[in-house]
Length: 422
Image (cartoon, rainbow, N blue to C red; front, side, top):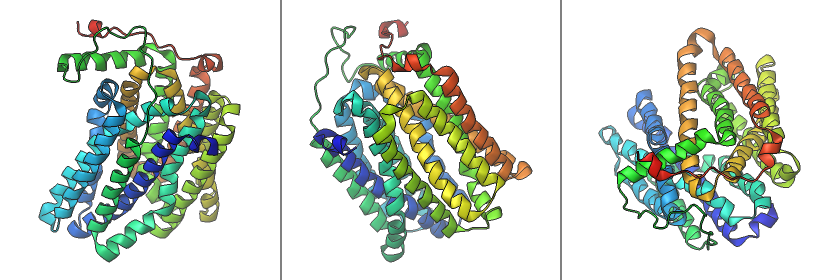
């Protein structure tokens, strides 16, 4: 993995992403506590979650069209600078009747992220050779785990000592640092594809063409069996993620007899597992087939989850959450890498945008089901369904992803955007 970090362009992207993730975690910890203290309302806190989630459902897929149409490096820089600016709106909030500003700023930040995230996923294959792609994605995934391991206490300390404004300024500054790192990246030129139009559509092309390009991206997802299979595999896992997001706290309280402190240590254990998984995947990933990694990740999440449910012991759960972190990294890094390898560069933004929207929808379905059924069925039953969803994801990988097909280079079917206009 150190070899990948010696590649200047990727190292700049990685360092910027690490600092940005740390800033996000500082605000992620401080903001909900500030909002609840200010309003004493669980509804107000819930609206914050909704304002952060809605852009992914509404714009994720469409944003991918512009990621493919515009210069991705400039998109990422503009998104970082814009996120740094909109966060400063939170400094204006001093009373409960001003909390709407927090919702606006959060919604705007999440909206800008819908452009940044697919652009980042699409740009990584241009920064590293194909043999280093797994290691590069592992390092990017580890950023979030490193940030989660280190910075949450800092968010609480800043909130207690200096108020919300200090956390806002830290996160805003982290976006500025990320933008600076991105400006230093020198992207290699891409050869023009054989089916590229003689006169590419300008940035200001009509919404009719934007619609056509969006439809073309969705057709690629539908027509390419490998990409469609990856969406199905991810869908099962996202349902599981939605289920556990709702009832995990209930399980910690009722079955493990823990509180906020115990929850924090469990999150730390999973983050440590994520770091371990990223290191192992970066070193060994290319020696194990992608199908095996997906199947093992799904099966591992199922097995660890079942043991936690059958033997609800805090010390044992703490240990097993390390294994959960390893499996999560192995599973999701492999998914991202396969998507990057299977889609031509000019379609990656749209595919990753659609992937993000689909993931949000499936996660929302899981959250809704858990919210409705946790009362009558109980947290343990919901978590058992979650474990089964992960198992289905692993089995779907075995059934739908043929090793021979996965090993082939990607040759997406050329899509005629003009036909989509008809």
